[in-house]
Image 1 (tube, rainbow, N blue to C red):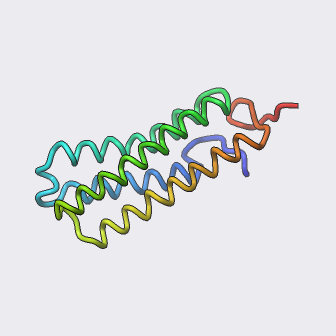
Image 2: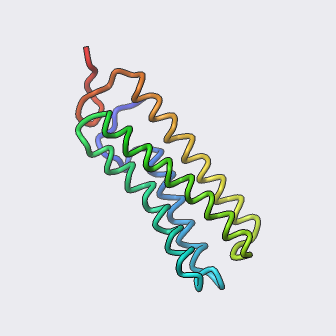
Length: 133
């Protein structure tokens, strides 16, 4: 896995950003936009994914990064559940639902892969450049 200087360079953060952007775009339309609780909760969950990836990256060690990745992964699950609510309430078309669920699942897989890598790689140092001997 490459060494990253900035969280913005990480594909997993970029995917989370795409997901957040799409949630904001779709959740502001029609009757969806009027369901303030669900709209805002979904926006918070999607923002939490990318924010926790970034915050964890900026911490000093892989243990903390893994903790923040676990929170991001949980937020992705929360968002997927909320997408079902939005679909059941007919706030979005099936194709938008499938697109967003696909992005959320991809993001979750990427987060899980990064967590596994960090647990097994021996990378321990600041921004994951140094290995424990």
